[in-house]
Image (cartoon, rainbow, N blue to C red; front, side, top):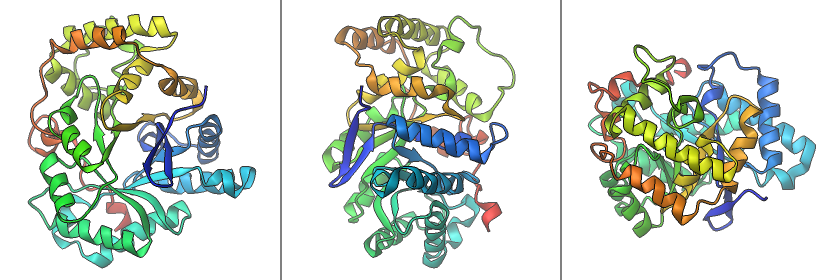
Length: 351
């Protein structure tokens, strides 16, 4: 089966399953650059032709740049033209008040150099604190860089509904918004999905398997106690608590396992496939350190959930609590449970 694709803008097509790059940043263990390049080539050859990275993912833009070069060597310029690389522009929290147009342009140009391109396919803009600096001016600068030809599509990540609306009202069109969206975290459905439909914006979703919690590994397991093995699990364990607790989470896993049995796949595949069915969702970002999960990643685009499958999931979700606030509101509170575990100055080594 051919992996499903969709169009974000005229002449700009992506695979609906997107290979994430965060796990290549080194925080999950030692990264073998040559092996990582081969893994990315394997994904592209299998049909996952869209890749997500960021200026704050240490070394990842360079790895993807090396992948692009090697992929072109093996398959030619026409095949390379189907490859899309989405990166992010994330100014450090402690530099927001001092950000200038030349500094921002240098940041964007550096991403292009790392990726080995003249024009970035899609840049996802993030701003840590609306009260610091001038986020809207920075968005205007990015729009100017787009008009200059340095950026093809301009997008955002983790902005809330009011601020996305403000950008559109200011003449800054976002093609997509990268947002956390899963069966546990449905905050985009509150207001953002309506705005996206109205303004023609689509979602690129991360966290669809909640850092691995929405998987067979956790089915039937007790609620983990104490410190999690990484920040990702800590983050999504908080989401599970807000969702309704461990028992309700286990009920969801049991339901997903039943659906997975019917489709011959795993729980994580069903969890991501379910997000793909939501309004305005163009793609889901799947994280992987290597190609061991490639077959499962491909299944995300192949599984078609039935009306009965969706109804079974919705029956469990009807018992859940709605997470507080808009998109990313909890995480923006740097003193709260969700925000206090975040890292905010990830470009420091590039200063």
